[in-house]
Image (cartoon, rainbow, N blue to C red; front, side, top):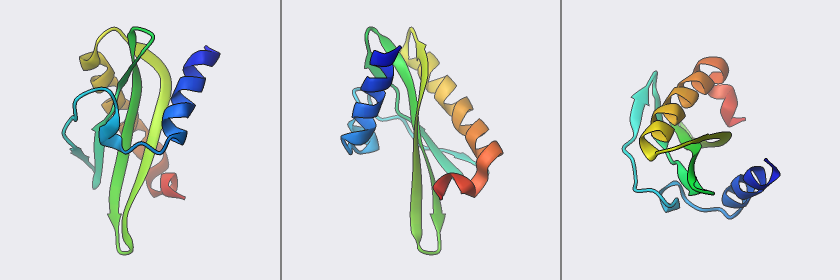
Length: 99
């Protein structure tokens, strides 16, 4: 468990752009004025749930990156779960996620 958290933190702290994960770029999905892009990556033989939520504001676009402990056997499952998790974050937090 600790190794998964450590690997996720290393990816976030490294400052990688969203498109620099191991998996091919996935398209942005529009949801309630936000853009969601799943960015799962391979770790220890599984795909880690990760993604980016973005929204335009008058002062420019803002992004919220997330990584969850959930892992999946294949990238399609990880992508689907990342989308549902991003929608949940949007529904619960709205613009507060950017503060």
